[in-house]
Every structure is written in C-alpha cells, then in structure tokens.
Image (cartoon, rainbow, N blue to C red; front, top):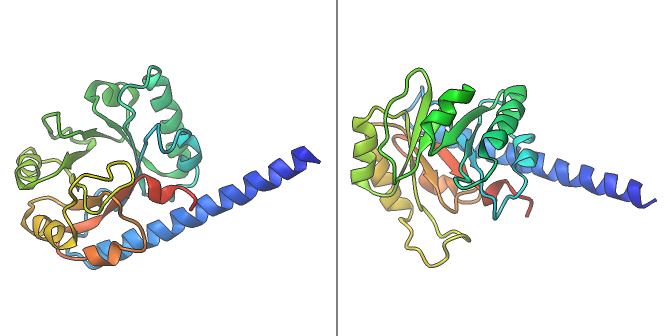
Length: 215
C-alpha cells in the first residue's frame, strides 16, 4: 500500500511540475510576442541551483521543447557527469543545454551553448549559443560587444535566494533592455504572475529557478 501511495504522490508531483513549466512557457512566449525580437535563441530558461532545486533531472524532464537549461552549480564535484546526464535528458526533450562558467566543458561534451557568469569575460562561440549574466548597462554593453546571443539581466525583482539585495524593478529593467544591442532575458523573481510588467522592446523572455518548482 505504501508503495502505491508513493507512486501516486510522485505522479501528482510530476503533473504539477509539468503544469508549472507549461504556464511559464506560455508566459515567456507572450513576453517575446510583445517585443520586437524574432530570432532569440530561446525565451525561457531554467537555471540549476543545488540548494533550491537539488534534483535538476526532475525539472529537466518537465521542460518544454525549445526551452533552455543552464547548468550553474559551478562547484559540483561531479560536474562533467552531471552535465552529460542533463544534456542527455535535454536532447530527448528538444531542450537546449548550456554549460555555465566552463567553455572547455561545453565544447568537450558538445553542449548547445555556454553561459558566462558576470565574473567571466563573455565571448562569441558560434555556432554554439552564448548567454551572459548582466547586472548593469556596462555588463550588457560588454556582452553586446562580444556578440553574445542573449543577456540575462538580474535581479529584476526580489528573490528568495538574495532577500536583501537591491532589485532593478520593472521600469529600470525595461529601460536597460531597450538600450541593449542584444536580446535580453529577465532573471530574478520572475514568474507568470509578474511577467506582464516586463513586456517591452528587446525583452525576449525570462529565466528562473524557483518559478519551476511546485508551489
């Protein structure tokens, strides 16, 4: 009986995760449709985080096709094995897989792309997709000059991971996006409930962590 109950509980949890991912995908698509962007590499991304989402495989299996998964977890001791496992799941689902903070690993495993944290110098790796973490106009400009495909701008709203950190707010974010020379994704406290506030020129979508987790 306990086994049967556990199976039912897991099924319900998985359905809840899939529903969340579907809502987020619809919100991201709506955001992109109200921008002036046609060719952004992706409009929705899940960023791994060992503390908040300790089993990224589960989230990866709920992501819709054409979304992206960005592997952070920079200090994971088994990072290459983790990357290969997530890459396999993403490939089966038609999801893009980007390795954060390690160009060599991204190239070694044939990932779809690489993500550059703010502490790395961004660069174009064509034909690989590239994204860069940005927090201000100067960092966005640096990513644009490097011909990076997407800038992930944060923190747009307050986040549970950094409760005391100053957020940009919707208006400042949209102004930064409008000035950017490359498509921008919002990151930081963004989900389907507040994404409408961010619609504007050059806003291609958003990335998130907690938004993908069951409420």
